[in-house]
Amino acid sequence: MTTVTAPPPPRAGAAEDGRRDSGPRDRARRRRRIIAVAFVLPALLLLGALVVYPVLFSVGRSFFDASGTEFVGGGNYAEMFRDPATLTAIRNSAIWVVVAPTLLTGLGLILAVLVEKVRWATAFKLLLFMPMAVSFLAAGIIFRLAYEEDPDKGVLNAAVVGVHDVFQDSSSYPKARAREGQGLEKRPDGSYGTAGTVSPGQSVALGFVGVPPKELPADAKPAAGGTAGPKDLAGTVYLDFTPGGGGRPGAVDAGERGLPGMTVEAVRDGKSVATATTAADGTFRFPGLGAGAYTVRLPAENFAPPYEGVSWLGPALVTPAIIGAYLWIWTGFAMVLIGAGLSSLPRDALEAARMDGANEWQVFRRITVPLLAPVLTVVFVTLVINVMKVFDLIYIIAPGPVQEDATVLATQMWLVSFGGGNNQGLGSALGVLLLLLVIPAMVFNVRRFRRSQS
Image (tube, rainbow, N blue to C red; front, top):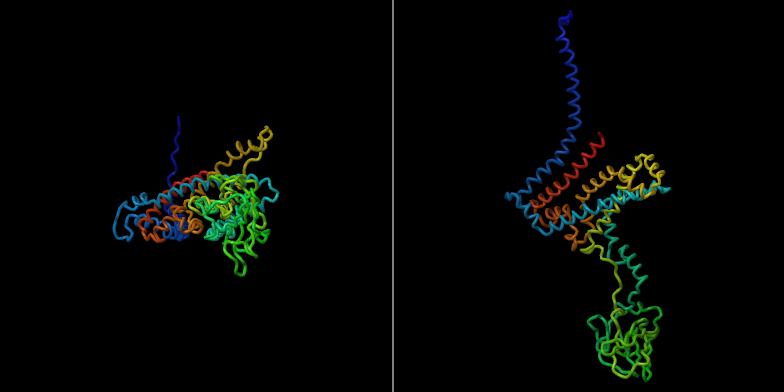
């Protein structure tokens, strides 16, 4: 038989003691909540004033016209996708989002792996990270100067022109032009030729002007009249300018100098039958020509302008050029973040792969990259968010005439609202579009951080 023992009756005053005990705990809990709110409230107020209110205001403003008085509904959003400039901005933003984060993540990964094998790794990292200390304004000015088309100002074009001139000679007389009325005609292809025909046994004087005497080649000598044999065609190409004045146009005078190094052709029936190069005194000779009528021609390459380099900031290359400046700034950031992830990898897995016979490329491709995938994803998404907001570099580097070719959503939003368009309704719609494009990447990044902390 089971005996059940009843619980003892409650002690008199126990309920009152419980109420007395819970009172201090409740007051302490309320005090902690008040302190927490006091600390959080300034941040919430700032967040509301600087983020929430502008977002809500922009959303509301996007439904009104340029003056902000007439409700247009979705008219601004429809206009946004009909405007060619906005479509260009969307296209360029897509190029930025695809190209810049991909290149930066790849460069950061490669440099982070290589830096581990460098003796002066810290100094190398510092050198690559230094551009992060430069403001976008200063970086834009630096690259605007570096991309200058004039080789005397732009360092990139100076290098390109220097390499080009090593492999291909440039013309010595880009400013030369024939003296009018002296028997030389300029052809449509840029070459010069005698107006009439000449025959073997004759010599011609081909005078040019437009070349400053100080810019003549160092080996240029006083011009001499060409002497032709019975079956030769001879002549002189010279600078028809007498220092100090005087002289006769179309005649070789004392003090006038020849133009050495010019290519001269004897042309018959439209075909070049002989070629010569002028000597230091400007003379040339075509020996052993057959009887007949010839035209003396100086090809266009004698007068070709010098190679000026690449138009980095032209409509075709302005976006890649600005992306290059962006890479210069942010490569160190990507390298440092990926390097931090690389330093936390389990070394035993890498060493085990090497002991199993894997070479460095196989270790990198099959071990390092898969283990670094979470870090690479975070870096890539962070750069995508940053790229969507890029403004300074484009506004500073792109010249005015090609600003529209380089524009992205952020610059287009500013140009439409304040840069001359003065249509803040359409600008607000662009801002809302930019926000909608950035939010998915932000949500993805936040979720990644939460998963990594759990």
